Length: 115
Image 1 (cartoon, helix red, strand yellow):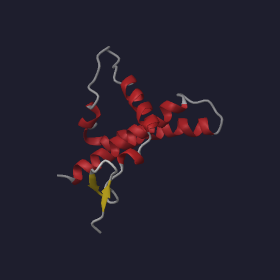
Image 2 (cartoon, rainbow, N blue to C red; image 1 turned 45 degrees about the vertical axis):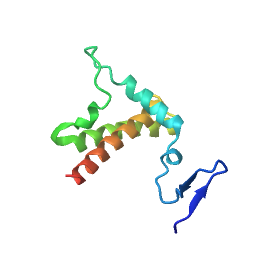
Image 3 (cartoon, one colour; image 1 turned 30 degrees about the horizontal axis):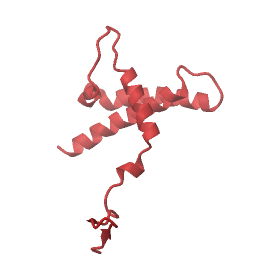
């Protein structure tokens, strides 16, 4: 269907029904918290700061294993906190750690599909 959105200003646009709604699919609260988590973890033990996109270089020949093991540790923290137990980290770091590792894992899958 070739419907057109007409605005009271006189402007018009095609419909957005088949377009990806990035603004609706994401929570700005979650994106901001995740960015703060990622920024906090840029500082290395030697005091240097890694580039924000350094993780996109992947983690060597065992990238998926590195991501899975780390994601599982963060999940264990989340699960313990969910059950009312103490964990190595707080709930924010646990959730963001899971998000990071899932994203890094999936990034490689999608990158490999584009080859």
